[in-house]
Amino acid sequence: MRQRFRDNFLQQYDTNRDGTVTRAEYDPIRAETFRRTDANKDGSLSEVEYVAEYAGRLRLQYAAREIDDAFLRSIVQASQRFESIDRDRNLLISREEYDTVANRTFSRADTNRDGTVTAPDWDALPGVHP
Ligand SMILES: [Ca+2]
Ligand SMILES: [Ca+2]
Ligand SMILES: [Ca+2]
Image (tube, rainbow, N blue to C red):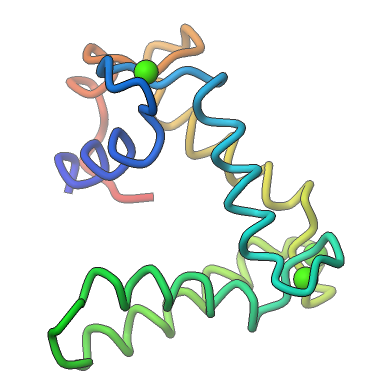
């Protein structure tokens, strides 16, 4: 699991491929993902927008494979994730709620708290998937 989180994190956010993720790399990608997910461009994410974005990415990973139970379970989990991110329970994820989660994910990866995510962080990372 640790390996998977690390690989996903690096693949998504290490844009210059130097093995380190800085906030200068991380923040614009999070912002871009938020914009892309906000399909109706009203500045917040509905559950439909949130789950659709996730399902779209998952679908790409599946490529030619058939949709299976694991796929459907992942979609249900995405829906549950939406509910946990929506702290004020207004059925929308605001940019602020989204950033709170982004900051938490980055902090979790930055185990030595120096503001960048580097190899020593990976070695110390607890074996949990966010
Ligand atoms: Ca980098
Ligand atoms: Ca929206
Ligand atoms: Ca909310």
